[in-house]
Length: 88
Image (tube, rainbow, N blue to C red; front, side):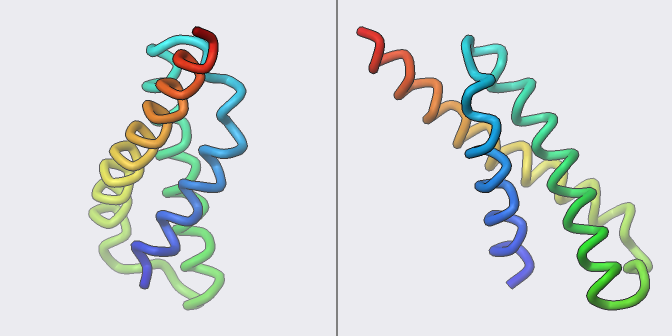
């Protein structure tokens, strides 16, 4: 269930950042920014929901950053691909 919530947060952030993608390098920058924002937001929401931080939150955050970066990069690459081929 938590991975689905993380995926939804990453998708919402990708939709809000799609106008920033003008070149391929922007996909990497946006994916990195989105992965950090979504991970911190997810941990804050988990803290609010549970009332305490996960004892292994540093390990959880590092894994979430990697997963969020991969998801964000794939989505941003698809957006970039659509935008480039739309201009042709």
